[in-house]
Length: 113
Length: 112
Image 1: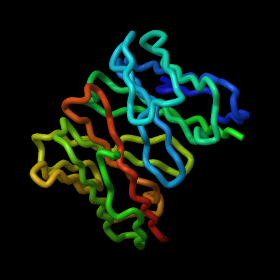
Image 2 (image 1 turned 90 degrees about the horizontal axis):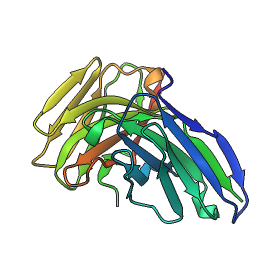
Image 3 (image 1 turned 90 degrees about the vertical axis):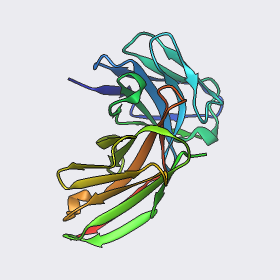
């Protein structure tokens, strides 16, 4: 039982490049989330998906797009990376409406130079 | 802005002492959750308390919730060096669908 799997674990991009962060969960969860965590700070919600086929903006959505490909997978795309997007990105999943705990991936450490 | 705010931002104690961390939030919630993050790792769920509960225990953890003051506390008893980590509270807001919002965390250091 892998839980939440994120790929890649590390990535360095040049300003203006694009990339997609992948996330998959094998717990049959409806809700999935993308957060970013900057040094010494908490997690800020970028986008979330309450169920397959739906996505909603979180606190800091600018510069990002998401796709809920199916119930298992929720990807985050940076169309034109900027240095301000240097951060650690976490994907998480939970049962509907967050009534139980969220399970987190191990994170993707992204550096934009 | 963050829904939850932890206090203190950093806490340093000796092994065997108790550690108390506080969380305040702004709007009505369905539940409040506490998570732990070891350096460089993902978050791990510790305990969840629902809005109609006032206190909950899990091993050495004790969580209280005061909805009238919009605050929660996490007590770790008989701390160990292995408890060194960042601790975050997260709230599920009633009107936000399944949005789980985190505070900025408390960095706990337990000295051997």
